[in-house]
Length: 246
Image 1 (cartoon, rainbow, N blue to C red):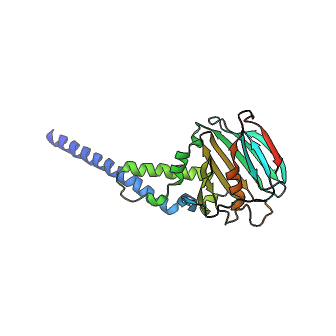
Image 2 (image 1 turned 135 degrees about the vertical axis):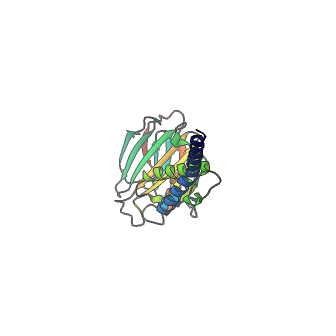
Image 3 (image 1 turned 45 degrees about the vertical axis):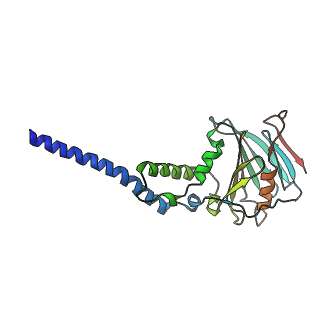
């Protein structure tokens, strides 16, 4: 009977030791694998823009869902508002098409929605697989990094052509702060802006697969949108759409 208890006790110690060891080894092995297979976009972290100039080209003022901004183009072909497909955020979205082939997808999420949290977005975008070291201070730390890896991968997978591989950049204006996913120095099918304030998140995706400009959208053109963005007066309808020449 004593021998049986000793055997069971030894087995129990081995099981506990195995579980404790696995708690350290499993996240480390997974982290090592993810570091080797992560895309360039997941490794990218926010950097400051080098070009802060603003385009002065003839353009238009646009108003969508209580926000107004300027674009340095005046060849709008069609504007259409559609409800944003999210039951949780209750946001809005719209397509804007230009005769040049450039398309904009505008999405607005109200304050309080998870997607409108700048601090959370910064935490995710600041993450890099380079921080996933073997033998971290604790398994909890490694699990947290694995969660950030998963979150960043999921977010970037929803951006057309994953432009963040060419860079993620900090955006700042008088009323907004946020991120630009993708560099204008590299012609690609998609670029994305995410701007945050106490009112929520305002995002624009530039789809330029059919854009006839060889260089694509430039940084000064993007800067004009960022610097001119502001909320309209309280009397304006949050669902209003407008486009006026400037």
